[in-house]
Length: 202
Length: 202
Image (tube, rainbow over all chains, first blue to last red; front, top):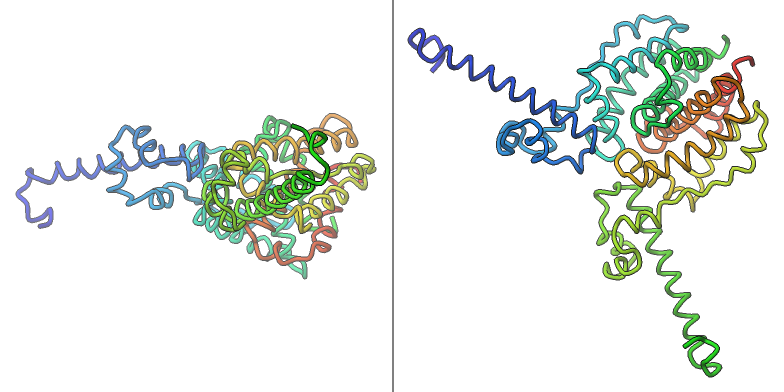
């Protein structure tokens, strides 16, 4: 039975409300999951703890996402728009790539997702897959194209390595000098250094 | 009763043999533990699997190391001699630091320990502690001293970040361009880049 078969004013408003309510509950669960996967890592975060933080029944989390793998897949996403990076000149690639990463890690919506992915990428197969394919290889291919020449892929890979290392040291290992520095100071120091990586003739 | 109280030739050779046997069993267990912590990570590696790989009873592993934490602490160590790094000139710091890290990750004895530490440093408290204090902060302080000036600590921290990122991308995430490159090609490309990080006036 579809909504159009129903008498007006009977089920329809109720159904909309129920859908809206489910949408909000899902968002609350995913926020709680992102926080816990970011703080504790996949293995130690439990469905029970996610449910408690979201103020829902654990059975509801299971009903929506099946299991912890499903919950992780739904919560830890990487959606970065590479339009600016694809259009950047060789000289602008390092700063643009740095700004893109910082934006993800300092955006209030993206941050937990980014940390959850990074936290788990060395010990969890699907986090590793997203980190390798979406975070590293996709922008790397664009950057290699801009670099050109025989070492292009390796130089683009090493650029990604230096940047992901900076995020790990700043947001996860929290090495004091790097964790307490301003984003602007890191960009001021790293952008010219990474310029010599993408263009050794500068 | 001490060995000197015993009649010559009774317990002494036996006791030496028993100690030697225990030493060998411990080494076998620690090798197996390093391999499994490196391959599977702390959470998924089990005492049972370590015992099976070492061909010993799980009870013996518990008797020697108490629990999985004790086994991890005994097996994942970081012992790098920084003599060359401490003596390096500013211009030589990047290549010396890179050579030191590559030596750890490509040495047949150190390798499993290094990968086990790196694999677990984002999700396991004591691995994070070793990574922060022994792998990062100790050489970072030396390098900052060689760099000098107002940004010394931050530049040394970013050098460490770029290098640890390279190891993660090469040995753990296995991003093709960086994982398949020769160590020499990475040193050739990264050393001059990192020189501009430690000495922006070059």
